[in-house]
Image (tube, rainbow, N blue to C red; front, side, top):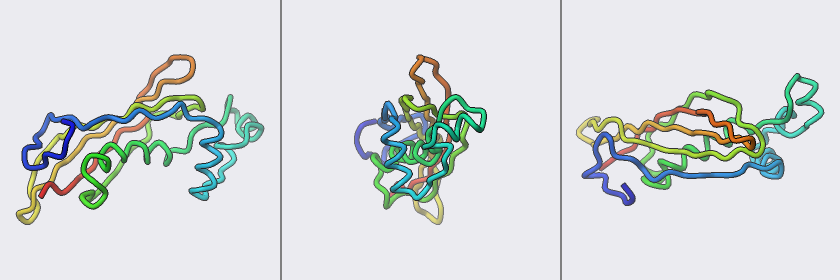
Length: 143
């Protein structure tokens, strides 16, 4: 599914995916400044190592923001009713995110058509390992 066809959208249809990254240390610093999230575990290597980690890691909300774009790029922000997610794995510096969405349900609320979209983000780490980093769900108005 590559265009906005809300009237015909049905369970099983896939939304255009998004690939983002690799995520650099500079991106983390810029995100920290833009979001106000200056947690040192995301930007200070010495702090991260002191906490027992090998390196800093990507802000969860940065990953969630990329995942949300799967829905908002397709449907527009004005149609978004709800968005939720669950973090599954830490996203390391240098990783690439591959985000996807599949319509899982079409339903009505007070006579207005809605679509439930299952969302998923996979990471590919710099060493080639892959993992599911986020799963989520969005509901959009399809009227």
